Amino acid sequence: MNIPFNVPPSVAFQNGHFTAENVVKKVTRSGDLVGIFHDHAAWQAIPAQTPFYEVEMLDSPQGEGELYVGATHLHPGRVGDEFYMTRGHFHHRREQGEVYMGLRGQGLLLLQNERGEARLENVSPGSVHIIPGFTAHRLINTGTDILSALAVWPTMAGHDYAALAQGFALRVVLQEGKIQAKEVQNG
Ligand code: 6PG
Ligand code: NI
Image (cartoon, rainbow, N blue to C red; front, top):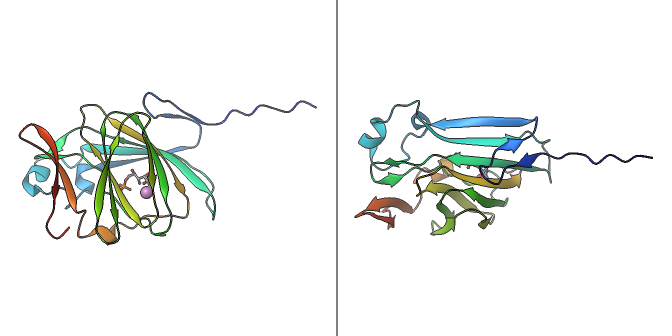
């Protein structure tokens, strides 16, 4: 009997794009990111249709124990002095963790626990990031190229954006020509 060698989906190390039939894409634009950047006037000056990031993911079957795999492609740029970043979220199922791996570009992963304690990890090609349960996460592009990161997370995790209405406790900005993390009052 001939047992077939099935061809799985693949992701290009250079740019994080998938080769697969069941790829779903979602674009997040400036206009979707209301209240995310601290310089409101600088944000308003950017056309609402400007793409900030794209998420490509495989349309996997959902259920307990099932996993999604996706890639986020975050454009380089700044809103005022603040680097482009994703909205950031806790998982709706708070205990569910996630793994990120850097593929392209340079940036930071901002992690924050439920007590509001924040920390940063450098993201670069090949970097591996364990996002524990009960931890909000946001990507920040501090480089000049697109920041692409692969992610694997439980299909049941969901997103809870509202829980971060107070925002993250750190902002990453370019000041005096340096990439700096600043503590934010009131999150
Ligand atoms: C997830 C992943 C990841 C994330 C994107 C966009 O749980 O789905 O963390 O795919 O959603 O990087 O970030 P936001 O969902 O915060 O906009
Ligand atoms: Ni997530």
